Image (cartoon, rainbow, N blue to C red; front, side, top):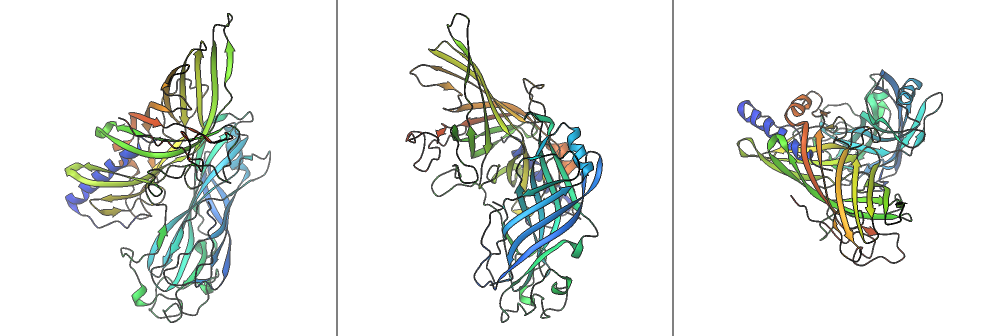
Length: 536
């Protein structure tokens, strides 16, 4: 959640804007719905959200109508200061036949979606926004008729900052679609983002639920929350009326008493361990060839002649079987190996949120909180030769990822970038085999060598090492808020472009599928023991 835009005028505003642009460059280099219990203390019961909402979505062929159904359980009432944690949340979107035809025209046979629903949170005049995220299972495109996709994923908790009804209202909706062909390959492009707006005729303006915060004595009133208009308080009114927030509980849109949305904290470190949790779980169980490893590094930002530090993040790897093709005289062989991987943080395919600060124009400190979100399969392809004593290998990591900004501070003052600020498409690198690997993705290369019985040098999948590449920053989209300044074009002109050098370091992988975990590689609970140090 980002803070409200502060009033800035004249030269100060211009400088702040320039500093904000510079903050975005730290993104250029980087390579569940958590079903929380709704029974917070003081809750009188649970109300079910079951809202069917009309949306208008922009597909390649133009605007199409779509239906989004939101289901969840939330408390009817909570004590003041108690978090509201939606439970058993699911978002189901039904795409009409013309939209399905658009996807089929790209060669897609199967689709997987990551969904983002912006939920407005209001208590009296105080407002905030939460993003309810979800992922779907791979789904085959139907030959005829609509396509229905059901997503579950991360839902932040919400906490009212005074007594009175806290309401939740659906807003913008987006789908990041990963497309695959009938033989399992990627389409061109391999991912499509579809942005949707709530239709003007949405029932109750998209209202999902209202939760009464505080007791009657605290001014919460006796009016039961409801999904009907009769249960919803007006947007403004005289303090003390039923269902209204009393005067001491009111917060203006710039105030600190706006409802709080509990997004993940930046950095993701756990206890004394300077890295987020990195292990397999029920949602992502380990297989017979499972590895996990941490990656960290630096990347140059060409336009501002600077570099950004990417803190350690987790990757879960499914190692492929090596394939050998022997030379005619059996003096050696070529080796190929195809593996796949996923970024993994709190059961989502993304990096942890992290902060970076640049001293920009006029030495103004600008801090951005951001993350990388995976939009398709990460592949790891190795090709090498061996004479059975000496082996050399070239490895290419291909990762389709978009860059997302969640908050900005300029000289300590929050600047609201909204909830949808990201690159329009994936980061893009030159690919040595563009026909075999179409579409936009980050490409990192590593070369490793090993003599039997000696320590490997360079990069190998198991032992890790340096991976380098160049990346282009795509255009930005969704940066800014409704009624505020649109930062898309400004950021694109100032930040986007090619030639940004990346150097990442992968640590020693933990072979979690082994019968006995190697104590040199793995912790007792199956996490990588080696947390690498970034190198310039």
